[in-house]
Image (cartoon, rainbow, N blue to C red):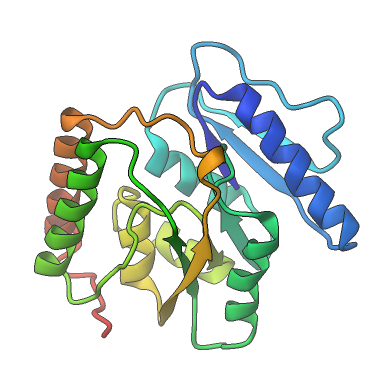
Length: 224
């Protein structure tokens, strides 16, 4: 599942590479792309075999777009990633196998190895978000910003039936999961998109985390 906003060329490359890997491995797959109401129309590459595009009528933000895409997925395990494909498709399977090998896990989260922040603001934001999460929640996330994760369909349904907000979606999924793990995945720096992170986005994310904590106070399950 790939959320996308104004980066159509990168999405096309992403789809081609994912399909090449899964076709070579003879694995069944579907790619769901969620266009978060981009000003310029996003188009799938003509050669795409198993990709479909969901165009949202209004911009809802990346987190809610991810939630919409996960709800649209039919498979028992869905993998989310970013349109710039910072993680190799082969490493998606490490997340999937972690869930398949342990029935107690609902969620396998990627933690980027070799990742360098593209700006001081982004580095500061990552550190601040990690500190806030540790203060407000009992669970710890090594890499909150990693967009490559695997989630069971049962957890997606559990979230849809709950009263938890969809943003931040990673906090919602961890909060509702029976168990989760983080797996170190090597990154591809040459494929990282130029960051548009700024102080306003950092402030919005911070407020979103506090709002989530207030809304979720009676629903959270804490894990070590």
